[in-house]
Length: 405
Ligand code: C5P
Image (cartoon, rainbow, N blue to C red; front, side, top):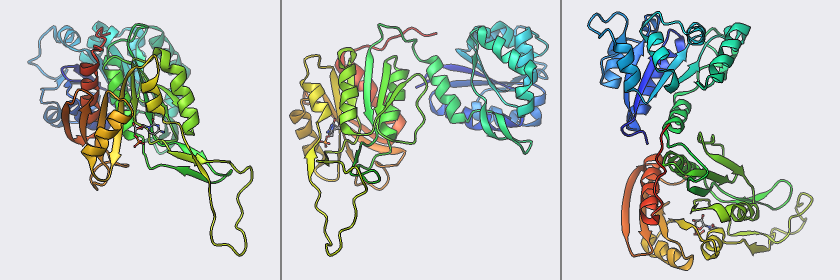
């Protein structure tokens, strides 16, 4: 999603500097070019050799006698985004005051409009009124402040001050570098995760679904410049940056939310594993075992087919569905495409052990209503989601909304 994007990663002297290695790896995997710039103190925590190997670029730092006198200007102009992670309390104070006494602070002074900082420090240092005031002023200038989170700290205590995890930072970078959204940006609505149908106050009927594919699609749609809403059943996944999330339980609730957004939906992707049936009645009390009987008969009634309703509606958006099958993949997927009147269907074989449910991997083939077949291949759900969104944009004629910050 960050293909062709240039990230200048400023590293200051905090123990969280070790997390930068993973962040660089994730950024490179997403297609970004990364240039590391380190302060002298950062070199107590990471080495130039490691940074060079991970970024494939010579790290920039004050001790490099060969660097250009205008290196700070060149670096600030080169970058699409400057992220200082970890940003120590001292560095934040320098940003606030405009102090430029080393390569990184000078670069940040020049490139402040592209700046994001990820604070990391002991919680007393973080909660110090001076740091709080510095962060408040930095934020008020439009500089992005990402984190910190609460949790275990290197000093052995626990509290606010932990640097965000590399995955969380990657998500925020994606959002910061994604096309800027306006009222005119096309809107994409995605259903994700399972639905839950209550049987009594403690039991429920549900489907197996982690929600990972739906959330990966939401991240990819936002990165492509779509105003994205994910309507999700109960899952334990963080909301991708820049994506609106609506939590629901039952198929009926999911349907209501989908229909209320329908008039402004340009693309609908039904990725949720919606329960086909729900109990005809929900017992107000816990259902008890009945002595002398070994059977319990439940009456189930059909749930609304949300995607079919969307595809039948007058305001019909471009509609994409999923067919998760264990056999006859192509035939079943094509039948669903026709019966539900979809524009495109993503067929995935959920019988495979290495992909599908709970896994970070998947294997997808797309079939469209014009008879086209596109093999998205096997791989990471995020990569497949990006390819699928690209295909949806191509087929729907809805172009990406390009206006970067
Ligand atoms: O019929 P089946 O559940 O196999 O169809 C799968 C596709 O239909 C998925 O895109 C799923 O999100 C959608 N669906 C729906 N409402 C239902 C059942 C399925 O939107 N009640």
